[in-house]
Length: 178
Image (tube, rainbow, N blue to C red; front, side):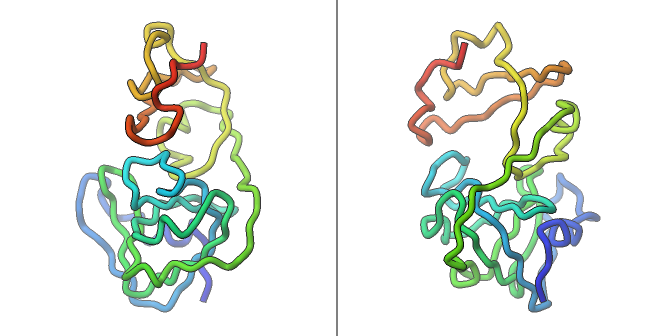
């Protein structure tokens, strides 16, 4: 039985973001999604992070399977035996083992969701999703590099820290865009 990413996320709706409690998945469900960031394209905090999304939502998969997939690959994730929980307030699904994540052979350009309200972004409405927004680095951070994790401000005044892993992406040592 296929489930959407939103349906997977909804399973955790009663979990406390600050708790380490997990919900074990006992049903033979499958989620399909498009890879939007992976350890093989190191733009994440951990090399075991594999972010996927479908047309309903996005989610972090915490798995050793990250190196098998690239941006735009479609994957299927067998949920049975895995668990879903918050880790540092970010919802993640951990499959039972690496074999539970497989490629379908299909590749597509991930669709970026347009963020029109910065406050919604800051609240986590678009957690684990590939997004597009109009924003800029705050003036006090213009001398920083991307690895210094600059503060970003949206057109409507919402702001957030753009954490960048210093040993990660090739652009982490570059000065922030002016």
